[in-house]
Length: 508
Image 1 (cartoon, helix red, strand yellow):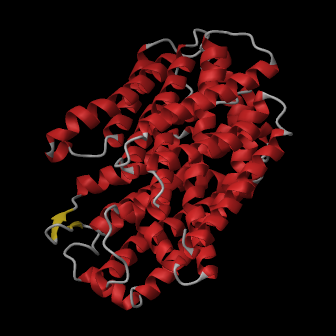
Image 2: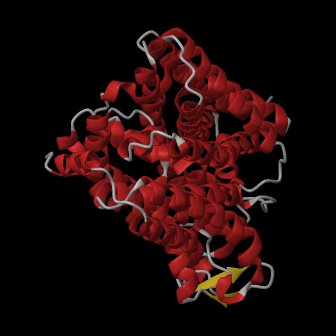
Image 3: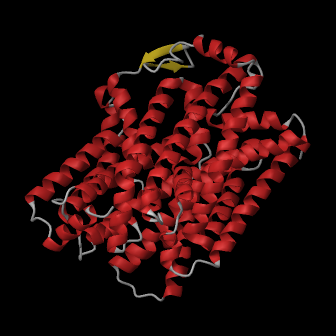
């Protein structure tokens, strides 16, 4: 192992030791399933904001987004980032406080809990459907995080991809299963700071190695369609393809996903003081805009480095930050330690999302399917055991799905993101803002949105033409329409459901 690799390894080992220690500390404070899954609703405004966004961005921020910008220019990455920034702000503005108040009022600690209790679905069908949606779409989402870890260590140290992925999964499962929600949220907060440091250092070093910002821009301008928001660059032929209005609309639709993202919505439910949500919203929105902007810029800078000869050609564009950090590490031990912090940032972005997803999927199986649907009466201790065992089983399935080392982080995340956005987004919005919505509409809309993701992705989108749009947009609209129509043609909600809805509206 070289001196540079030793320096990198030291930083990463220290980082991993810290997150495991956090898990151990919070394991002593986690007394029941309410603490394990929602942290007793005691999150402060800063931790709420940064943990929500760290769990949101995942390895996609430091691998997927720069990789897309590196290959295709700013159009695809830019419109995606704009859609996500808008979605982030609107989610905090219109959903966060209302969901916090509603879930606290009815005593819900998971998203399926919230839907079932909100609509008083005694049959538990709504809870079962919601729990299954979480498991179906979170398993591949978690797999994308494991794949990112495998790529990271494989690229850096020549370690076998599969071994690196399994070890990373064990560490993530370790601290999450020990400390639950509070451990995940606290480590997410720390991870958001590390991610920010990584982005800034990589950008500064990359620009210097590429010959300055002027050289970077000059290189990008020489590539057809690279620096315009209305064309996309084809690296193979150095030609541009139109990025039309329909494609822009479907790319902006990434923002719709926020309304149905369980690991983010759970942060809203866990806020200690709803009156401080405005502060959380400002912090979260500013961080998201800056971090995504820097990530896109890193992709452009990385291409400038390659074309100038400062960096070798990339086999996988999603490893651009890894390669820049690796180059930095060769400048001396201090720089190797700094490079280790950067690479810990990639681990942080991956782990911050994986831990939250594992908790949400685990709660769906143990709390909602076993406890809610099958009505298994378990002691508090048994519930904790089941929660942790479920978390481990889901992780194993995620590892199996991520076994293919050529899998794309960006593509896996985009599919899972669409699934949650279409299945949960319309139901969440209508449950909070339309008192006429009922359980029949919620069930039908959830199923329609979730199923349409598969239908559009694998059946309709391949037909091309105007149908070649991101599956989230049509599936979200269909789920919303089905929910409204079914609610209107079936009996209106019971009076006590409407009374609770009106009571929550008055909470400030």
